[in-house]
Length: 339
Image (cartoon, rainbow, N blue to C red; front, side, top):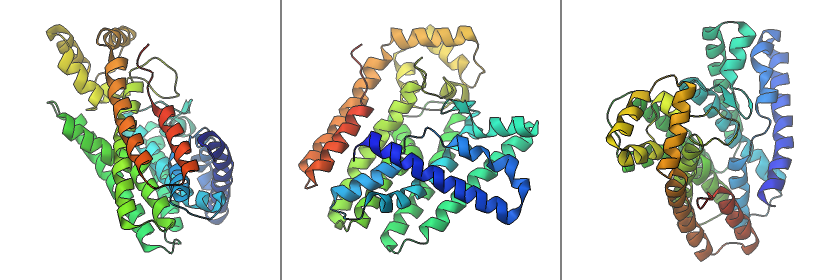
């Protein structure tokens, strides 16, 4: 099953799961939960289901025989952890838009007409999603699979702590430090861990799982770099733009611009860090994107990493049909940097 077909089917599956969980929780604990929980119905609409797809795809790549819906039930864990990460990340980054809708805390600020209450309730809803993920995880009989999930949760939280820490200190992080943080914050739980999870459930050998971990790490860092690049581009992808510079986030894109900017440009960039941007500020940043050929240079780096992962996949002993689906996904993630 290719990515787009899986996304559509998983979306229906996950919608049903969320509705049942929310309804059961409200029935058990009372209507006082409705203002905070009912937005989960809409909030999870439009997700790409990338992480559940990695579970399914690498289960099949390694010869797994269960049907797609059995793997979707495992993928729900990844999507719940992702939901928690998005809600908390948007609070930390003060994001306004997610999937073309208000971020969770912004929605609840409006519901409660109180910023503090809205932020607090959103944070707790994220925690609730995490608790649901834990309850699903403990039902998995495979000990190694449960360990992968536990390790994944720890890494994404550690990555978020480091991300915020680096955002609120002066000085510039080197590329290796940024890549390590990105791997923890996003790469491991987006690619490496779901891929390893699917492979482990299919009975892959330790050698295969180690190889998959390497491939997933390469793709994961490229994916985060891609996400950071899109933050600087005008295309409407349903997220708040220039959130990284407003929050002071240390990214590969930021590091590249500082390294290639003139003295005046560099001074201007540093002055905008952790500042609420005006329209004029945004226009100037878009100019710098063009002047320093950000799409071409960062896009080329992303595509090089994705090609490295493709080569490693094609060298492995996997089910050929599902190798095609994986390489199609890598094509989807690639940046058209020759515009």
